[in-house]
Length: 239
Length: 239
DNA sequence: CATAAATGTATCATTATGATACAATAATAC
DNA sequence: GTATTATTGTATCATAATGATACATTTATG
Image 1 (cartoon, each protein chain N blue to C red):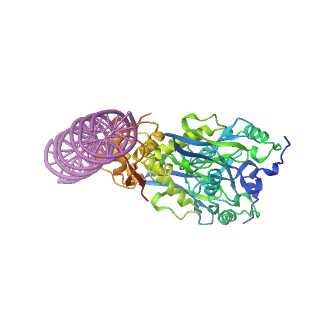
Image 2 (image 1 turned 120 degrees about the vertical axis):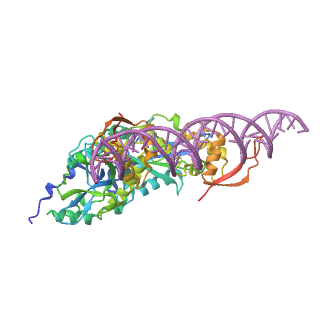
Image 3 (image 1 turned 90 degrees about the vertical axis):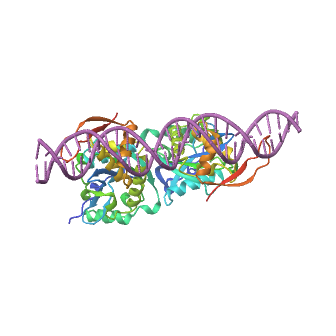
């Protein structure tokens, strides 16, 4: 493979050095919570989708920009949850391997091989609306169940772990369910989302009582399709 | 005043550019929650104590280092709570004014006048153990009640607001009280800490029941001093 | 020694939560 | 058509958590 010029890589002049972001992008399908994971070209390395912050760009906007590029979606629910700043979290070695596997030969001291502090965000989105777009260095970006992730580079496993913890904590405070489901859904679907996030079974009747008494959903017409049983109502989130 | 040489300022070579931290240092006294605030020399400007991260230093360690320098304490309870990254949060103007008021004349484009992303931490400590040490640019560092802060530079007011929100959320999950009080304390003192943090009155008897049933404190001997009333027990936190 | 002030505990009412029961109903099998 | 089955929506009971109140206790003061 012909060596590519480093000029095709993100340029230091445009970006804040030593600063990156990583996104834990949650989606729900098949009764499981999933995350989007990048696979880098020719390297067998897996990572969270992330990126860099432009010098004249708000941190939040950089993350939104990356998210839109990778998923095709705008207006995604996004929350910053932690910043990872250990010296040894950055591995110049790993980054070099990824770049070389893509045909680049970054010179010694290239800014992408430096130490990076990473601000971590999680996103919640409707799995069915996403068309994953891998970045320039990656073969593919695919959904993996949270409990069945491939080995990830650097500290990305820790980042995911923390994201899940924070998501669980926020489950009752924020409208988590509303962002992972289509606009209308059954009570059963919502319960399965909660169970997937919490990793435990909930009692159906008490869950229903809790959701209804929390006054967070409105009830719509009944849904008549497939299932030898009473038709469930459809619900949607308020506001 | 003779102009000082910029070489006395923190050097770019040693530090990660565009990255800072700010600390919201909580202490409790006089039934109120207080924060340590710096007053810069000759400028009438007030700010949270903060600093920069060395190129070979863990982010957490940089914050601990700064905290020890400002308070004289080691082993302080410290928690990262948010990272502030808006482009317009940094004000080169303000930083320039502070430096000039200290006799420095930073050249155009000096790194301290750049845009900064700031990782915010809060600390909890025993007010009586602290000896505040202002930094090189500051006249003084003093305790201010959270509800009576002077006007702060840049977005420091937002940082404090967020810190208080997170502290309130964490109040029941983490051992907040144990870090703001001396090792032994009365139930009344603990209740006052809770009330100061939450900004609301609690029912004494129910608070006592809650703390005792949470199994977080051990009871010691009674305290016989000052007060025309039944002597209270002293308690201390477990673990 | 009576008083005032605050403490430690008990108890009642109310609310929230967990567990169980049961009628209603849409698709399927016959 | 009719019985069957799986799931839904709701009600209800028991238990736990929380809020409100009562009261005896005890320490310094006058």
